[in-house]
Image (cartoon, rainbow, N blue to C red):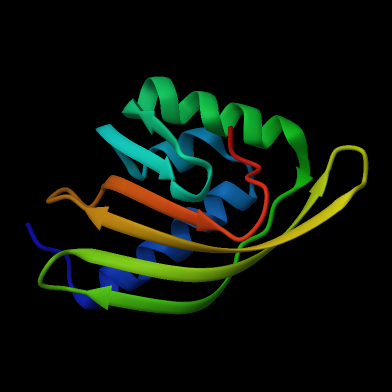
Amino acid sequence: MSRSREQLERAPYAYFEAVDRKDMEATLAFFAEDATFTVQSAHLTFAGRDAGIRQMFETFFADYATISHGITNVVVDEPRQKVSTEQTCPHVRNDGTPETVTTCNFFAVGPDGRFTRVIIWIDGASPLK
């Protein structure tokens, strides 16, 4: 089933809310079982929701006291079921060190509304590993 323009536009907001709460199960619920998550700027790909993507988020959530994604731009391609976002991300490491990066995320959405592929570009060192 295709998602409406409004559903596609809302999905990244809800996803980033779950990430920013560091809610693992809510975050992973956005991904198809066989999804891929690529950090293009770091040449890293994580395959599978319950293996690679979970492990990446476990590390990310453990490394930061606070995580924040402020979406500044959204582009929706309803016919292709894709949505792209630009965001400013002021995160704080566990030792209190602030880090702010700008990122762009490219989401492909499957028939069930879950992300089948996410590609990210980060303008600095990737906090995702």
